[in-house]
Image (cartoon, rainbow, N blue to C red):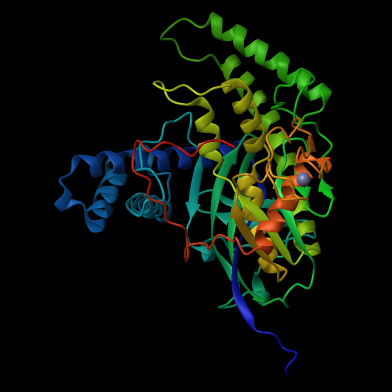
Length: 440
Ligand SMILES: [Zn+2]
């Protein structure tokens, strides 16, 4: 009896690509456009109204009226329109709690196309083949998707484990379905593995304090020292991307002011976007495999708390006070944001928890300049981006600069300098006009 471990509710998402006919693609496109327009109408209505009259009930009535009056809003299922209202209200709540900017209009070109299916039972998800599942999309019909994960359907579903809803999202590779899944998972035993410090390196994507590192074998910079934005593409793909970009630039010069973007130019843009999407998938695949490996191997994972948006912003400086070495710093910072460090940490957090481990954050300043052997920061110790040689007399220790930082990070944790996270979701209120934190 004692061996039986407690069960805990777990929520996760699962994404699968939909196999659609061109007609079905047009139907879902129309739904997404209608959803975006509903958002824009709602935002217009909300901001025009005096504060006292802004209520959920009034907004609901306004949406119903709009769906009756505007016939091309009709393709959007009623539940999806309700979901737009819910998301819009949540956006304001996030703004009032200081988590996000105020909601705004959604532009046709910049917005990710998406449609919500808020109720899981409408999906009627079924497995029809070893590798294929079927799902019901409101007003479109039955659609196949690739079955790559066991979802709680049929007999495995219950009150505790079920699909609670989904969202259809379109990217450069087509329409996808993102299931919201709720299951019961066994609370894991505490992970007995060793402690490790991890640094988001400049030369190595992830440097570990025990001397190991996680590398994807794709150099972050080009031979001339600039950050390689397309490192996840191979040489042929890079050449193709360059050709497409040149073609797009040329077609743009042919466009007369005030005229619509030509279909040819749009197609070129789509091809560029699809190459970029391929690169992004490769990057995130590597990230998933790496973080899973780390969470399985180590019991305690320690990382720096980096404020990446501010690091990238601060290099640029302000108009009154422009940054120094903007090109170098922003190149450096961009290679950090390119490795998507924030997402790595998010993945490590939930994966470590799932394997019984823990993730801790320590304050970042100085970890790359301090010597991890003698603990003293001596000017000039960091000889280059790659090499650290301690200039402290009587020490002279040298190592890879990223490993040095990772050792410092672990040391900070062992000394008890762990940042305590705010309960629940961190709430940051940053008044306007405050200078961003200086880049490291
Ligand atoms: Zn030293």
